[in-house]
Amino acid sequence: MDGEVTEGLMCSEELSLRALRQVPHVAPGDDVAALIDAALRAEALTLADCDVLVVCSKILAKAEDRYLDLSTLEPSPAALELAARSGKDARLVEAILQESERVSRVGRDALIVRHKSGHVSANAGIDQSNVRPPHADQGSGPWVLRLPIDSDAAAEHLRQQLSATWHARIAVIISDSFGRPLRVGTVGTAIGCAGIDPLFDQRGKTDLFGRTLEHTISATADQIAAAADLIAGQAAEGRPVVRVRGLKFPPSERGASVLSRPPGEDLYL
Image 1: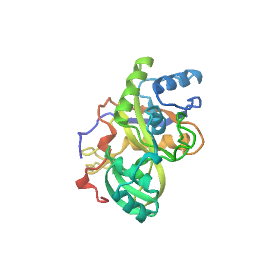
Image 2: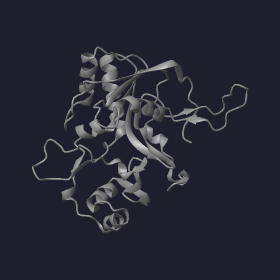
Image 3: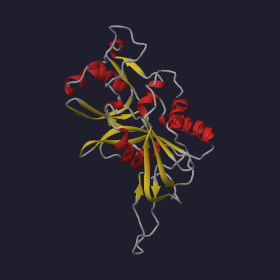
């Protein structure tokens, strides 16, 4: 596992999670940091040291104009073959393949793939719900929305802008909803991270009875993303940004890419 033991991560006896209600619909080219800042001020909220902002990947993808008109795609032979096996639209399969490094599993109406970012998920994280862009011509589509180009870079950009504005050492996590092998349902998952180490490696520490921990590594960024997902929602709630307060952590330059197992260690590939 990449990384050294991270010292100093602490959680108080309670965490405060607050979803921002006044983040507007995001359009291509929008300054997401400015929209978040405006929402914080409109709701009389602040950012302080060790606050974590969990930001839904969808609003960043919209700002980056990651829309794709499936009618513009010509499915490859590989896409046609996988479409026949999965029952999916061959044009959508082509879009998935273009975003992926490799296909892990093929099921009815689902392709499990390793995204170019390294994350393993269904359908390369491509979203088909409520994603028609404002610049779409009448009769075009169907449209889909791809993940941000570089979620770690997007998280760092937001962290720098908002830290400077609020004069506070904050962290930013970019989240998406992922399914899990052997479990039903999706949970919030970190696909981008800046300012907090995505992993809390406790190997070498001792438990309550003095036993040395040998395998304990917590996926801190995923845990925070999952907690925020409870109040951000995954349907029509319209709450794409959540402030998490109550953690204490040292600064970190590692991104969410360290959460992905190397292909040689991934038993599901």
